[in-house]
Length: 198
Image (cartoon, rainbow, N blue to C red):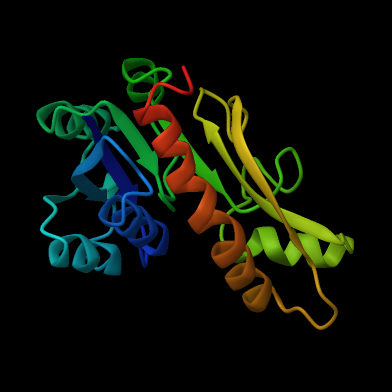
């Protein structure tokens, strides 16, 4: 059974997609052992609590050095017996030592078709604003392994989503979540949990 720690910063819609996929058997041989948030008021924590999942808040500003923050993150993941770390809207750049500790065992969902609209500064609505500004006809989402770069790790899954006339960043964000993110993130976890991705 793959033990998953999910890291979040906001509403937790991707977390909910994972919870639902485990409940309905879409994700096999995996369970969420902990949800970590860097924000005390993240609604994702309520979603986790409702599902009976252990939660933990680790805010960067509560630590006097990056090293102390990294130690807290690592200790939390290790204490939970984590096999896989899933970044589901975790708006913090992971410390390099943490990435090294869990090398090949951290995945992230990004709301574009990498290598488009990714890297430093590209998160949340900004991604969709830039896609609309550029005039792309197709966008989507990507699940990738996390390495020391920003959105540079090996791609696991991608799903395209059509950009429609009249889209606003908010409308496009919702469509990308519903049609891509909530589908490919659970699928990637299932593939890893069942040895179909090494």
